[in-house]
Image 1 (cartoon, rainbow, N blue to C red):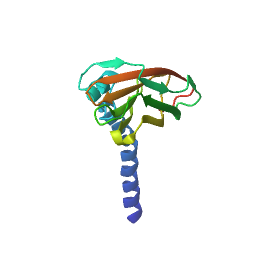
Image 2: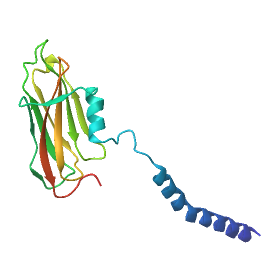
Image 3: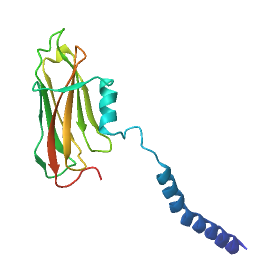
Image 4: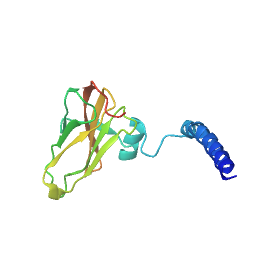
Length: 156
């Protein structure tokens, strides 16, 4: 009798296991954009509060023109600023224009930093613009961008 119970239980478990992939794929189909996934315009609006962003030569971004591997792309951002109590860079935001999560880094600064400079490595899913947005102490936003060609994508 124990053997029959075992076989029945095994049959039920096998049937459940066969249905699980279908249930999981149904959940994936219903999945809406997550909290970290937003397009470029939505991310810029969230950062700036819909204020205008002005391209400026005061912001410089350094990234390779061609990245062999999109999983580790070095990016450096420098903003010309006196970094005094009245005139300084409050934040530097690095965005990848076509990633599913366009926001790569948010760096917050004070006059005590002395220099508005930041370097990091980011992931790029393919060829796209890397954008740096600098939030100034007077409430304005300055930007710079550089196109990076990616030979092997880094975002899956």
